[in-house]
Image (cartoon, rainbow, N blue to C red; front, side, top):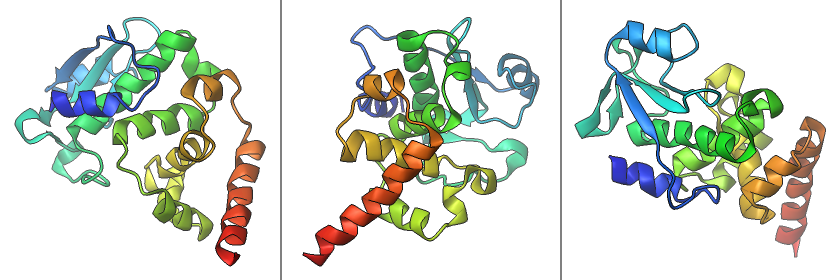
Length: 198
């Protein structure tokens, strides 16, 4: 499982050779409630980017690389979000905090913070064309408020990193506004359509 976390983290150009992370599994709900900063035991995992830079993870089946969902239910999108995804996702938040300061959660928009963490957490397991199609048809899967998933945010990051060739440092040093990223996504559709017409 930790090897898979390392594989996912290797997709980040913010990862340094000596990067280390402290991971705490909270098998009791009260521990996740207390340490997870949200005063809730309904989160999957959380990273303290401002003080300790520790990662807190809810009860999990480590051998099966599976997080145990709150209330014994099922997690959304479990195929693309095993336990290693959640740990790499939170570690990505810490990588960003190490590079850009402890108050990154207050400095950057949600789409950038969560989109980049999802990008790293998925470790390359993201079909841009499929997700872009879902974006174009206004699928609820691409709306965080409706789905609870970061796919729409991930799409934005993938456009900047994979399609435009930017680096993580570039997108964090000069974050695009909501309007700018929206225009980039729309323009990508026009470019794709004109390329397919040729």
